[in-house]
Amino acid sequence: MQAVGFSNDQLHQYLPELVQVPPQVMATQTAGHAVQDAANYMNAIMQIALAAQTVIAKKAAEGPLQAAEEVPALLAIQDMVTAAVTAYGTVSKTAGDSAKTIDQDTAS
Image (cartoon, rainbow, N blue to C red):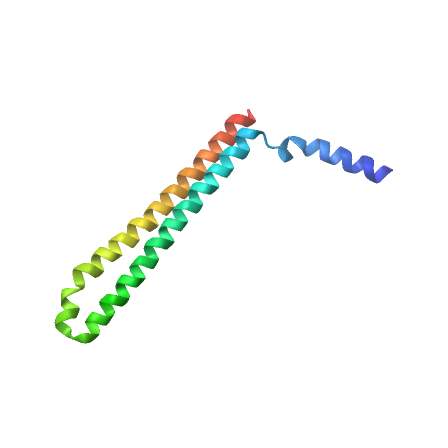
């Protein structure tokens, strides 16, 4: 009986931290979806880049002239990957900051 009373007292003490109101839940879910979508986009771009690099490597193996012709394509692929990684980082930070702000605003 004492154990149940103790547990109830402890839960009651931390109840505000354990319970999330709907805006908090929606904010964290939305932020999570945004980050997941950004990660999926980044992974898709990397798969496309890998496929393109494979084709370019095959052409480069055929001869030095073909390899030199593919340098602009390799640079464009690297730019594409860099942009996708940057977009992922931006979305992750923005989503996290937004969810934190909403959480703080609803807690007040």
